[in-house]
Image 1 (tube, rainbow, N blue to C red):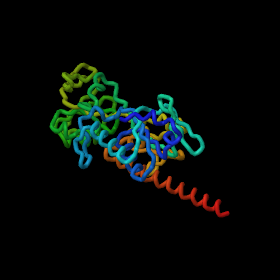
Image 2: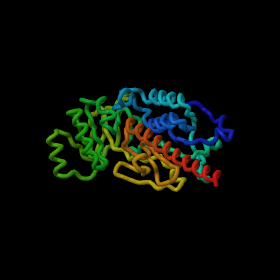
Image 3: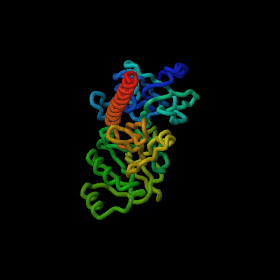
Image 4: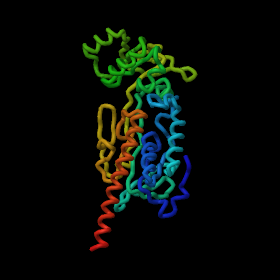
Length: 325
């Protein structure tokens, strides 16, 4: 990403209409929307996308299978073409100063914004299983719509950590006849669960999985605590998804929680309860795929522009009234 730290030394450059923290699908979509409305926009991004390990982005119409890095590069170029500025780095601290929100960058520079959009994504808390991190995003998966086609027909394990494991069994069973449910730490199966598993010919392995074994980057097996080893080609898990919310909390924001994880609650367009602060993408919707995140960025960008336009119109009315008084 283009580094523009050196351009933040003048007052004009150091105050913008909107500062967007996070340069993924949500942040860049918002940047395009706002820049096309002639808003001054800076996107601040640390270059650590959640989907970096994935080979491709799926279910994104017109861009099916595009590499995540290529999608981001194209999005940046589109935003910059309309006048948005890209800033490489991260925000260390944020505070309110009058009507502005002041962002202190990691190198000490400051940027003032009338509005901020948090598009900071989330982090995945994976189960404590040896070898799972090295395979995350390639052979250890969580979403049948993001990765299911790529493992169709293979031997797929489902790691049971929550009641959602049964839902994953149903979705991945659509993609393969070779499904194994490892009960791991999930709640006890009900009689209805057992009937479903039997009807679908799903193998059930009781006990915790202690290790995943791989060879040359390929998943080979799951080993349970009693030492038994089960051959699988892919493993689906339900990670705990935690919004990257430090900046929101610095401004006094409180987080919400659902069975999938922790997130920033917003209205339909992405406005948070904190004045001037908006959110889009996985930071507000832990289940959002790339297409949904991009849509949320567009909606938030449009709503922010509308709010600023209304504010400016009211100021113009007040100024006119003052002149004619």
